[in-house]
Length: 318
Image (tube, rainbow, N blue to C red; front, side):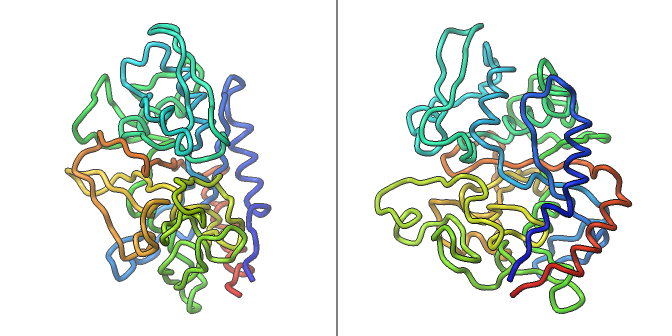
């Protein structure tokens, strides 16, 4: 049996919420990633020398709507993609009004589905905005010095506090388990498992992927709400949907941006730790691609280390 660890990390999440400015319009639940200094997997990925935290869930439609309403009244950086409205079952955001007074709203079935049709630059601008306190915070500096850039490879700034995960950060959060085999190791799937339970909600070790049907509904393009598969399909650290739902941007090797995790439109093998897809262009926007964010540890690296140690003692595979 898997045990939820959210309650153990409540202090860190609460501290992050209390530290947020009063005018913040979105809240991001993070889970701490401890066990600093872990070794790479046999694939060559996963080693991270420091503690950090990563969003428990993919960035949602509802969160992205708040971002658009705050920073895309004129939308000079093309943060909105019209496919978000024309394919509402995937993304579900409509835009009304004219340039200078655009407004955005959630359409479709749920604000809690992951956002899609976002480029790496869209994700980076969202990170800057969150780091700068949301509201009227800048999209152009903070975690990334974009300054109007719409193409190219831009690296994370020193001192960034909210960012797109590196490939190693993303990989560790998804697949690493410091208790596996007694000494630590990596699972094949980001559900604390080397086998998959399927794509049915409620079944342990399951995820939203394509197996001939879309989440069991023939002919339906179906994103699921973030976290819909529950605690029995989380990673060791407590993240949801690092397998399936949407691919997620990462800061891959120099000269490219990467994506990991598979999606609702791909088979289960694309969710495995052995599968790596590198994108040559950070400007791509697709119905199967979204993002989650990473951040500095809160309230302190020491507290994270303690919490991670406790987690290692009680969190076990059934």
